[in-house]
Length: 203
Ligand SMILES: N[C@@H](CCC(=O)N[C@@H](CS)C(=O)NCC(=O)O)C(=O)O
Image 1: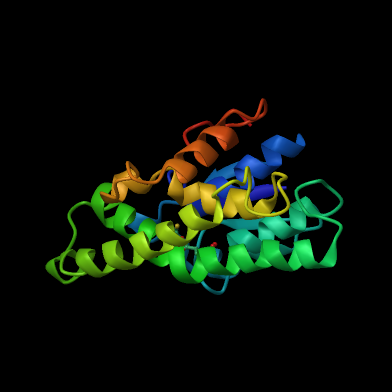
Image 2: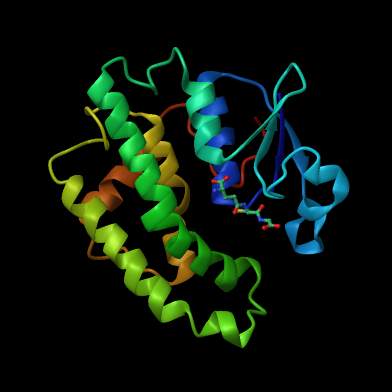
């Protein structure tokens, strides 16, 4: 499979991390979104929404949306539970990640460290991103109390979806100092023997 991606995007890190945990090989094709490479006619033919990651399957079909890729790659593995309620809870946290977490924590990081020449219109949105991002972190902190992972006390794709940008939250000027449950969970994920970092290309 081939992953059209940007190395320092958390969304692109999600399928790289899961593939590595599963021992699956992904060919990486870098797409520079800052140069508009995700909006060329050639790229839009792969993903009409013009975004990375985009996964090209072995049969040439394309799949968009990082959390859909996690679902696809996790089928038949321990990262996607057997129990119907546990499956729904994994989806619950993945939808939470896309609606209540990523739009604030990832976006603050993007404009802070990836495109720091942030226009004033974006600069003025940091207070809102911080308020809503901290609200998401509060939910995670409470949920993780007494738990090792988000669902059923096993490592699932819900953890990968939420790990991707939470472990880089400080890049968006979020302070994780008062979130001990989150910090312990981040350390647990990173301690997996097959873990790779966002910077790692050796997959
Ligand atoms: N919901 C999507 C978000 C994808 C996304 O926003 N990708 C960004 C990089 S993190 C991108 O490719 N932006 C390029 C553009 O908007 O042209 C996912 O989870 O895959």
